[in-house]
Length: 243
Image 1 (tube, rainbow, N blue to C red):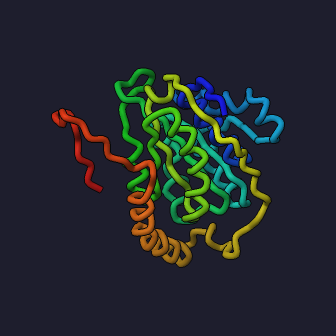
Image 2: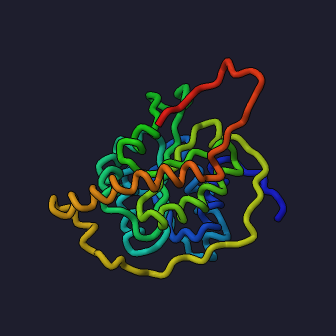
Image 3: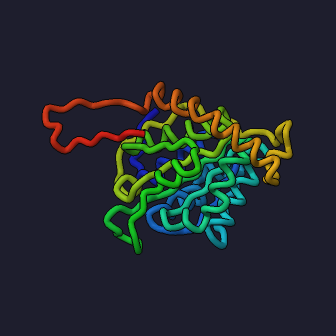
């Protein structure tokens, strides 16, 4: 398929559309705003009857997306890094209730504070909640990971955090779309419906499952095609990340 010249945020939006998403919820905040705007202006999204809505704040946006996931549909929620502070209560508990339909949480960090009051690294939230994190390094990966994120979420029955930055969000590159557009999920409820009710007795069981899944998350990360090492003669600016 011919490549499209897309911003990183547009690549994420198109990847989610092609990945069988049924709805997107968001609270506007640069550099994440254009994800939802792209979907709202997309002729393809309209034809597929993809629901899109601006919420009163990031917490209600995440709750709406999580509700759609509970019903078996694929949903995405978008916000900037400071918005994750507002949505933190729902975010942390969603890792314990788990997801039913794939749920992708896209958070746009703003290093150097181009349009923000502070700097935050949203990967810290992901580690805190103990949920999988995707971090695209270019626009093509942004598209591919948006599609893949729904599959990963459904495979492990947990929401997935995608962390991007301003420079990726607002720079353009050629993106090759997949020839296959995923069909949206049918409505379906999980067998264990009480998993969504976090009374302490239920939450303790769900938390044990989250802990037991950590080794599976690590194994999937090690085997992921997105985890690669690029060698270079000059290693003076390299960094080592120990998880």
